[in-house]
View (tube, rainbow, N blue to C red):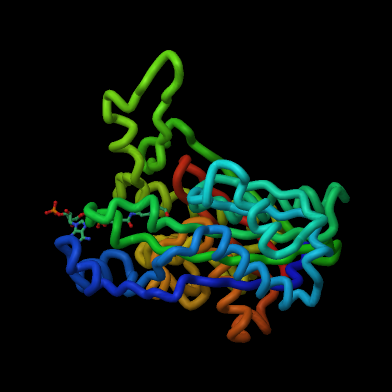
Length: 323
Ligand code: UT7
């Protein structure tokens, strides 16, 4: 797989830690030291498809193609505009990619990685030639703004890549899920209401609408699973950890990223971070980071990259790519 172009977009309104300290009992010191987050972008009306379309238009221009050249749009999100139509189809309409087959992928913070793996499978099979892969989230609408343990963590944004088949560039992935631990990170339950049952009456599902997280369990899972799957993918690619130029991890918490670097015995500078500006944007975090690095020239001398996502499901994965 070859990455032809990339783009990203985040809503213009920036919310600081001090802003949050006015709505919940928190402070900049706690948020900065526990997470590394300083600010996040919050939508003042744009939906996930709006963010995704803006990131995609930038990626299309960067790739030097036209929207009609795209034969598939894969959009990773857990906060789509609606259940129907799927968000990828809404993006198709907004960018004029009339020849694309469109569908969404929901694997929370691993979503972009799984979408990229799916794109690779379609390219390898010959079913598609040019695929737009997007991660886009409006997590602000799934956030309980009265819960200080979660509301300080998340942000809105989108990142996109245009990919095509290229035999000269290796692509290798490992991934997994553990549904038995799904309850540590939940949200957006839809009440079952039909002719037989009205679960609104219990109020249970409504309480579950917003994201709820057992932060420490997710933290422990991330710092063990991520190094494990990175080691696996590097071995599968026939490389050593030292051969990897950059590790682009899902941006959830700077302490998770440092811990992974330490466990792999790799210097911190090989793990770029931008969560200080964006917070945790779930499926959007890896493509936003990739595009920022690419546009600032920091990928110019980079060849071997490992991407790694982890989160709700539980889900995890690592993918080796060559630029
Ligand atoms: O995208 C993938 C999913 N998410 C993650 O990867 C997140 C993984 N988990 C984490 O990053 C961390 O567990 C958190 C940042 C969420 C929390 O950090 P922690 O060091 O695990 O803190 P904690 O939950 O143990 O809370 C410590 C204290 C508690 O007070 P007491 O009980 O010690 O008095 C909390 O009530 O900090 C309190 N606290 C806060 N204080 C100020 C929790 N949230 C806040 C807050 N401001 N925003």
